[in-house]
Structure formats: C-alpha cells, structure tokens
Image 1 (cartoon, rainbow, N blue to C red):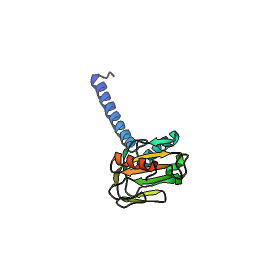
Image 2 (tube, helix red, strand yellow):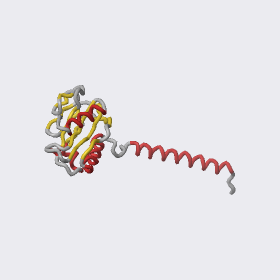
Image 3 (cartoon, helix red, strand yellow):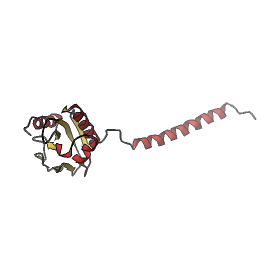
Image 4 (cartoon, helix red, strand yellow):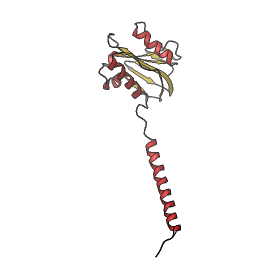
Length: 162
C-alpha cells in the first residue's frame, strides 16, 4: 500500500505539535528555577567574596529585593568567605527612612547580633565594602534609599565615622 503526500504532511504536523508541547513543559520546569546570583543573600555573599579576595574595596551599588520575613545572618554570609561573623556589620544609610542607626531598622526590620530581619517585602540599595586592616569590624553591608546613599555610608564606616 502506497502513502501519499497528505500522509507525510500530517505526520509533520503531528511532530510539530508534540515538539511544541514538550517545549512548553520544559519551559515551565526551567522557569521555576532562579538564576544564579538571583537572590539577595547570594548577591551579597558574592560581593563579600570579591571584597575579601581583593582585601579592600566597594561593591557596585545594587538594588535588591527582600521577601517578607527574610533574614540575613552574618554567620550565613561568612560560611563561604574566610571572615569571622563578628568582623561583618550591617549598617543603614543616614536619612534612609525607617532607619535608626546601624542597630535598628524600624520600618522593615531590625539589625541585632549580626542578623537583619525584614518584616515586609521591599527593595533596597545595598553596597558591600571593607578593608582587611580595620579592626574589629572589617566589612560593612550598607542599606540605603539610593546607591549613592548606601555607598556614602559604607565609605563613612571604612574611614572610621560610621
């Protein structure tokens, strides 16, 4: 029995439909994964690694998103970096709404004992800076309403006027 051109065309159409369906399923699966460095903790850790390896410097200011009830602990950050948790401090830029110095951030969380907890989802500019000759705190993670504000706070801390 001989098949004609219509049969081959139908087989091609069915193959395309199956391929599109498989592609849709794969895209849904891959879409659920977050890109490397996509979350705030990973980004801050990578910036810390860069500053620690160079011994001194500032990260580029980045606007990061934080989820409600998220937390960042200096012990978590320093697991992948050769730094002691007590050598890292969270600080808040001067004039940043909701901040009351480096210890308490009243609007969106609090910074105590090397941990920052976020009570609501928000975005903040973050700069990581440090100098390995400073003592006892060598590295700072500054939150601010702008990239310049966070960087200025980091620079103030590095120069001793934190």
